[in-house]
Image (cartoon, rainbow, N blue to C red; front, side, top):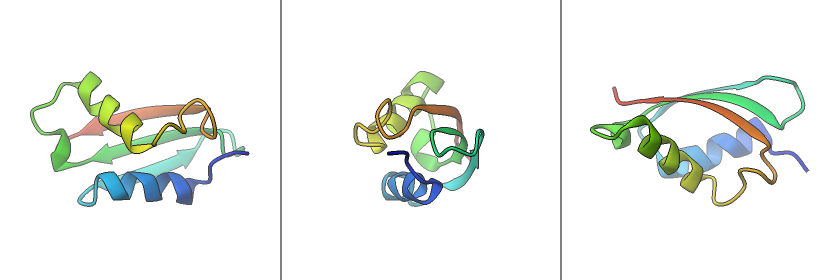
Length: 76
């Protein structure tokens, strides 16, 4: 079962309530997304740590319900 963009955004909003989030379904299959997240939570963190926070927010669904996620993260 794939993850809907709405479900993906719900996980991200819970972890990053202040964020500007843009999600694009790359293949139309609910398994391959591109996501841009701008949040104060990323301030002072390197890109690897920012992405780790996003993966933590997905609560283990990366690689299961969610197959591929191209990330762009930054602080405002």
